[in-house]
Length: 543
Image (cartoon, rainbow, N blue to C red; front, side):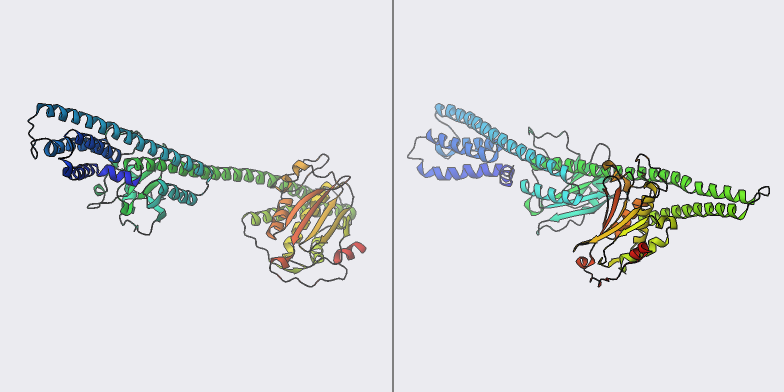
């Protein structure tokens, strides 16, 4: 129902009196020119007009007023209600019956039209809001959409969204109003009362014999029953589902007058949709939190399993070796003792690498690490990496690095750590003493560096999985060792440098892990002058 139709219905009795009075004043000058029965037809026309404007109640009033006006002004004797001609009594009675029937039928048709339009608007609002709320993921966007939709079909000039807080009440989350709408100073008090009592405030009464369905209407109380001497046209609706109270929706009409029952029905429908949306948001957040806790438990279990294997195994081997060395009934010569000590050193290196990987993972997972950047050449990174490798591992490396690789703005220690993890992965999966190749290239946008082996390679379905926490490749013939964190740590370090890390297939067999780092001059840094002398990697290779 439009605001104008609502005003016509609200002031229907006044409109009926005004129309009959105006028609009577208009008809009086022609009383002597037309027959007394013709005025009845003109009054029936006015009754139909009033019924079409203001409904059946106003039409009934107009029929009674027209009956009295015709009798008083147009039936002799004039200016009296007395009737001398018995035939006039019959005419008056028929006129009253016909006027009432015309008014009631026309008014009902008008009411049905208004109800149909109201239902059409409500259905349109329901469809638009339902479609919007399904795709919307943010509460703020939902509130903006709600304001836009409701202001188009009702006289709403203000919407405030109150959401439940930790204190057991509601706090104002969103308010949007037209310029002429000042905030209600008692809004917080009323909103908290509505939330606690699950009752509405300010809903208009539903007219009798109305087609409005009131089964889903919340119980409503007036404003002054909560705050004394307060008269306001705002409506407060509890946002409540079958399981939870989500908040309160405040709708204000401001200076436009109170809401009609049809508008209130549309607002209640909108509030129910908002409540469902908020419940969905809350359940999704709870599900995400539960999933995070489940993932944390899984990681904790995997971490404990990894620690129990990767830390206890070298410790057990060291303990056994030291026990043998200390045994009094065994005599060791220098060669045997040196072999046992080398075994201890190998186990200690493995233990040190596992602890370092776990510590790096903890720092990266907690986002506590920030790169300490400076300008470095790739040979500086290679130098730090090669110092941490054993002689037998360094002997397997071959290099293919151009002389003009540009310097990069990186954390040298962390990038060396990432490279070390890639090399350790290659040493594990590459068979025997096959060579491990290191290469590089550069373009105007990025510098690439890769580690390539001749192992069994990485199947396409595992090329993303191998960078996840604790994942070990299931490639046939491989015997994975370590914590399963090396590639994860390398990927995180590269990501912190705004770079990329991926794996490629090498023909006929093997894998190539590629690090791509952006040129810093495209990120706002000045490019460091390049050096063209031989790199440390080439010097290591030549030696």
